[in-house]
Image (cartoon, rainbow, N blue to C red; front, side):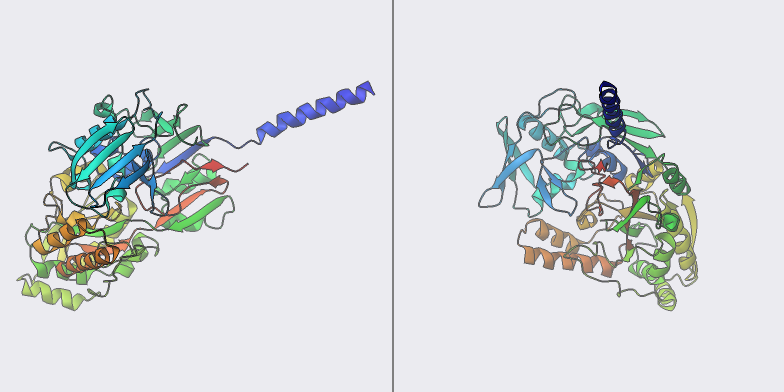
Length: 492
């Protein structure tokens, strides 16, 4: 009997030891196509910055959820004055930055005043333009007074560019980001990976993962081998052209969702001959969206005729305004005095939608007499030459910021577009909180941009995600620039 009990006890111990081997793993390697130029969401336009850090390392007063909804974040609640101008935010208490500094209303004031200052380097400074003043009431209460009511204010405060930073670490966030989020920064191996680890002192619900590595994989051809080998377990933004190789493999989950990425052929509106409406309209007629979508997004993109996502409730379908018409394009070029065509440059950043789409578009424009020199550039070069210095003729990029039609009203924006009528519509929109009126104004704004052919509107970038079938909690859609890992876990 004693021998039998000894054998049984040993079996129980062996079973217990074996069971632990099947516990859900707590590490994750995510593949991303572009390396961020730095790691401060409040000081750069590159989507890659927010895709690593938003909701993971940095948090805002509010946050945008997976369906585009506004949720509380560092502000647990808020009230709005009857005139719509004063927002009183009640903050969570006991919150600390990753370096141990306490988070309080003083940090809210610092962050918002810094973002809207004259010398601000925030890429979305317009988000804060409506703020008149920020007052600290007590450590857990802050008043934000607006110059005028703004229906989108709470949404704006959920952008990655509006996250809270500490005066003690703000100056060094580009290399060593310090936030209040559930993950803290561990390491950045330049050109290779960025590693985050679970914060041991997070104020909110603890995350499931202990460690996350964002692996930089610029070559789309490497995506499938990385997945098959298990070296990388998730690509939230997968190469559509490689989808056929994994879509029927039960080891992986394939999720096709929507983004806020208006993919456009950007035009320098003040550079001759693009300063002529007929030339820009000729380009729009020369574009065959279907061929571009088939060739650059495996047929998964949704065509657009202005700067708004088809998933948006206020979207207006203007794709019929410029049907593909080579003869009409040539006729407009003749009206512009360019019946023999002209030469221009097309600067293409690294994403495959740009490089593949650029070849197709160059061929289509060649058919109407516009001969393009294709100039591939790295992402840092694109940000410097195109976005900052406006040194370009044409380029292709997906604008993945949410609800960002107002960028065309910015006088220093790289489109170099200037239309007082459009500016007035956007100004009225910023003063309006009534949903019916906002819908009307957004419709007007879309129509003006289409009529002016400010850029060549191509398609809405699809979100093609591929990841291990045992992973749960990754976002299906991309309503904001983010890879939010707060709910991600492995099934056992």
